[in-house]
Amino acid sequence: MPMIDVYAAIGTFADKHRLARDIAAAVMTIEQVPDIPMFRKNTAAFIHELPADSLSNVDGDSSYVRVQVLTNAGALDRDKQLAVVARLTELIAEAAGDPGLIGRTWVLLTEAPDGGWGLDGHANTNEDLVRTARARLAELAAKSAPNG
Image (tube, rainbow, N blue to C red; front, side):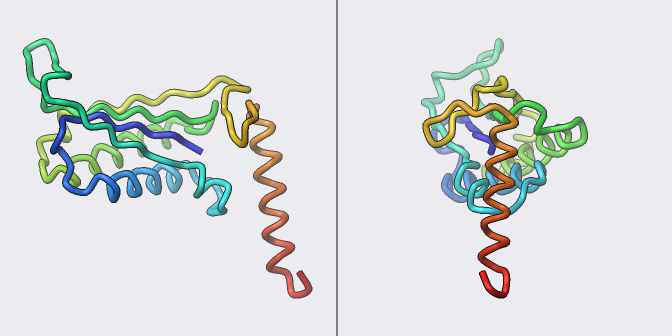
């Protein structure tokens, strides 16, 4: 259930809501979690617009985008890391209408420590999240059973 933050200069993206939705969906798909409400409702992206003068590299350029993806520990193996960085970079450049932004997009992958993933007011361990997901999958399966 990743939380994704995108930081860019004001006006970089014409449709911020669509970008947020596309990024959240991409990470959820790459992470390969079940497509259930628990994950759909708790995987989200936030687009943060900053005045151009509030970001800079050493040379003074401010046409960069920073993306931070926070997942629970162990959610992304190496192949998934590579896929998330590539896909989010593509989505950022597409949303900005600027193919050159591929070279100016920084994607940071971070993991919450075990017990550091708050959901429903509880600091969940990875085991807690797996147990909850399995219970929700079982509930959905029971509801869709012929006599459910």
